[in-house]
Image (tube, rainbow, N blue to C red; front, top):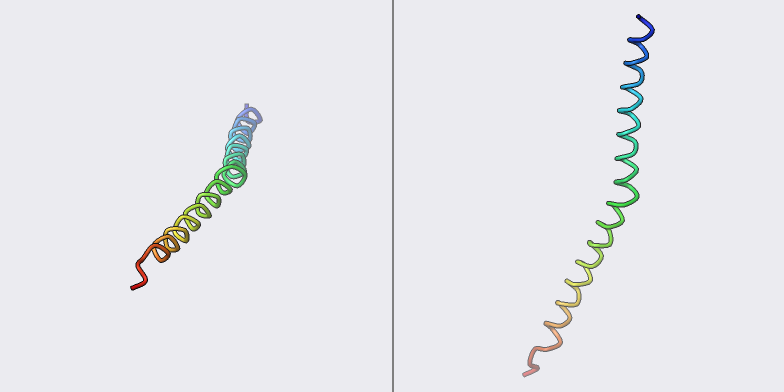
Length: 60
């Protein structure tokens, strides 16, 4: 019975580690590139708004 208990504990621990590793990998592969792309679009939007504001002002 003692070996069964250690087997259950080991299995639960291995499952928890595998789940954490898969979540970490998902975040690195899917979430971070989307965040970087969104930040790039925001930066481009700010730059274009700045240029549009300065190019359409009256000169006199």
